[in-house]
Picture (cartoon, rainbow, N blue to C red):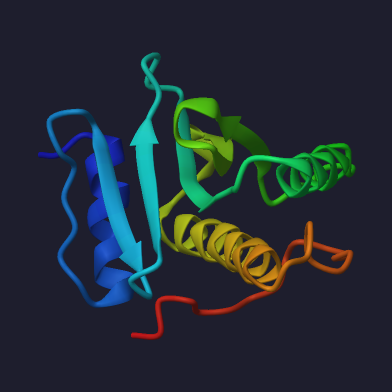
Length: 150
C-alpha cells in the first residue's frame, strides 16, 4: 500500500487522466502549456504539501523592482490567498508557492488548489510579458478552472 502523499498524487493523476508518480525527492512535477513547471511535494515533516512554481524570469532594473513591489502587495492580501510570491535571486525569477496541511487535502482538492495557483501564475506571466508589473487586481481565489485542458 502507498503512503498518503503517493495516494493523493496518484488520485490527482487519475483526475487529470495521466499517470503521475512521486520521485525520490518526494515530489511530482507537472509541465503546463510548455511554459510553467509546477512542483508538488511533501515537506520534510510530512505534515504539509507544497505547491510551487517559478513564474517568470525578471530582467534586472527598475521593471524588476516594480514587479516585486506588486508581488509584495499581493502577498499582503488577506487569506485565503492563492499563493505567496518570492524571488529566487540566483535566477532572477519570481516564484509562487503555497502550503496546505496534508490531512486537509485529497486528490480532488489538490487538483483545484493546483489549478488556482496555475491560473494565478499565468496571469502574472502574461502581465510581465506585456510589460506590466502585475495583473489587474483579482478579488477572490476560488475560481474553478481547468488549466490542464485535458
